[in-house]
Length: 249
Image 1 (tube, rainbow, N blue to C red):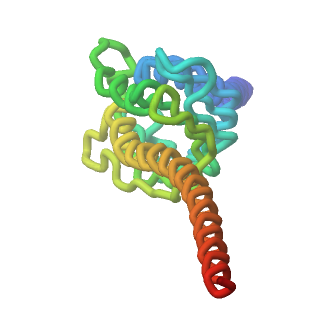
Image 2 (image 1 turned 180 degrees about the vertical axis):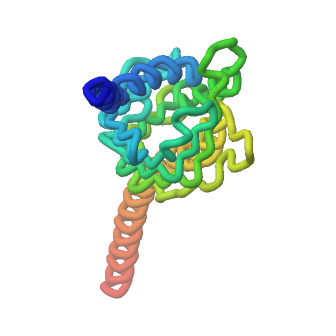
């Protein structure tokens, strides 16, 4: 009997070890499957480390692709970010996340013929969640999302002027998403995040275009000022010369 109990303990421990080391791979597959369903764009993750016992999650190499019509490359990339999940909630359909901290995300904002890729992504999120999939049964509660030192590469094509520059955005924190008993669907969480991010992206696009326009105007003004001064000096010299001629006469 003792040997049987010992064998059972070893089997349970082995199963737990396998679950521990495989948990990250399982979550990675889930993200790369549910992400495109929610956002309607490619989603890739290099690696996810998850501890079911502590609830600590580290995500490395997250990339979100561009919406259809906005070319190749990634819309957003994060080298790594940390997350704290309540372990007990991992075994239910309502996952509770205490905090997410995202450091130095890189965003690629593109405006082509007056349309923004972030606006398109927001539209994609708005139309998601209608499919009857297992992922739609999962709800989330996120106590805090903190984004630090975000940067955005701004590209404006087909407008009054072409812009291609990098702009630093302000840090921001979103709190208490889905804090009721039911939580929120992943698509709804994404909509809340986009609602905060979209105005900053729009402002960056406007500021980028405006800054270049101001530079162009300044260059033009500098040239006009130089011409004006030269003309004034010329007129002064002419007038002085005419006065001297009159005196000599």
